[in-house]
Length: 398
Ligand code: PMP
Ligand code: GLU
Figure: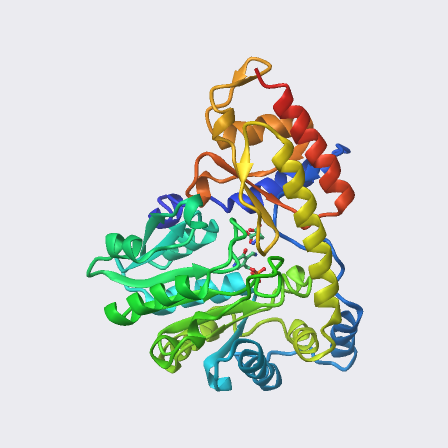
């Protein structure tokens, strides 16, 4: 029987695939270091866990309104106003099962068959897959390291067609760790307004910033015209170490929010009720744990970058935020490890895992054949061990 042709052409998530492989090896007793999925190693802060326990104990275990409980949607509006300088009404907020689900809902809500979405490469693997699943066409635009992997006006002009519907923007970026400046954002905003496009702004890493000269700016805060065409995505997974609770949200223009509500009401009903209560505590409770975790990530960022800089044949930009180091391995292509030639990042990652038990994400599915991504959301000890192994691996190339 022929199953969905659309789905058969899409590969499973590369980040989750590498993580699953590393977990299998660990379960088999191997001492694997996994620079794999971007998932904070910290426990969810105690006050947030307690809010979840309280929700269960008080019987808060039933369906909620499809877009989420009103207290949480109001709290999200307050957060978006105070942190991001954008004024939303709770009717414009839909709480979803993670930011990934918020994005998937969004693409389904805005795309008709064949509509094009501009995605700057390197890109987080799931954007293009989600666009395809929703019937759209990802239009990949290759950015350059010398431009901090940011989109320029010329890039946008080159990618635009009369089918273009939206532009994806993620800052701080997964996988590059770069942060868009006000000028970068203004160029995208001006283009979107001029061509009547939507902007999908993924702000999931907004609180994880290490470059003292950079701050997070929401594109939707630049002016009213761009606010009216921006769909802001965020969630609690990364800032509050809540990946497993699965709470993300979308803040959208009223017509888009309405469509997302329809989809969510039919396809998911609502996000987990208990996790919504925990997310409410995360957003409205004490914020000191966010800063403590950020400081730990910053130390790890400094350390991993310093170590990477000492290794020959590979190079990276110093990450400004998020928790990824995006490494160009093209200098190792053509070299051999114990007789096997490295042709691209996939070969590099396979040889590194098989021989040094160190998992990294090869970035072909992020649009870049010769890059690997290292998530440094793991302990400093593990980072040290993993970088020792990476250095040893590269030193053994011939
Ligand atoms: N956007 C980006 C850029 C991400 O890296 C991730 C990682 N999971 C997500 C969205 C989805 O996050 P969530 O865990 O909330 O689904
Ligand atoms: N976003 C994280 C990553 O890029 C988690 C895994 C995923 O959802 O892709 O590794």
